[in-house]
Image (cartoon, rainbow, N blue to C red; front, side, top):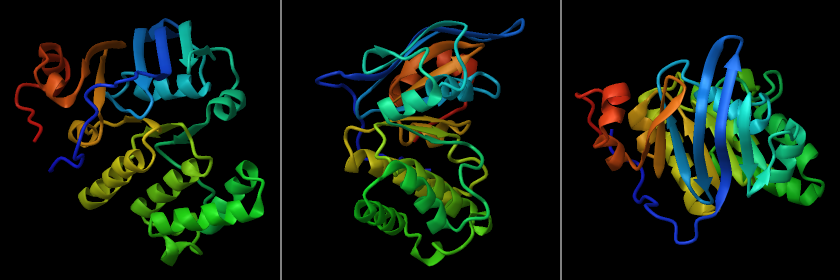
Length: 259
């Protein structure tokens, strides 16, 4: 598949960490899921999380949202230690949008009703609320299915709906958990273009995206990290990762090519 992204942020003139995980470890019983994880996401950056099944990618999202608390270490948003902040407080205070791998919408409500339901919680002004809903429906080309119940939408339409719901609050941090899951090639390309366009339209939004499909992540991410056995074994731009010995031996393999 051709590279979707026309440019990449190779450096940040004014680095402004929006999300920072410092010395994060997590243990369930006797099983260690994450072991001394450290990374930052800068303002305006798209960061990819790569790694095999069960390596802890979705767990990192749960840690960032506050659904799970680390056994050790700290989570910072814009330099503020939010490790002990509950979900609702960190979501509102630091404006976090989350697109889960599955669900994320009300099945028996129409697409329009889904947007209206969440918008009524996030946006007080009726006029601004209606404008925002209509803008998102138009942006994602969902006019023809806005009155269709969410459970009857196609896979790509559901994904668009969930991303639109996450964007209602104009998030500064957007988490995308396996957005390509169970989608066909053309729909994956469509979702990739949506992600890249978000960065173009709002240069300050920070996006973290995880998936098993390495090529599809590398096509949109500015930088990525690779997890293996609960640790970060490599991080950098797609080119840097392609030339990283640990990245190839632990994840990509010798035959993997990205072009």
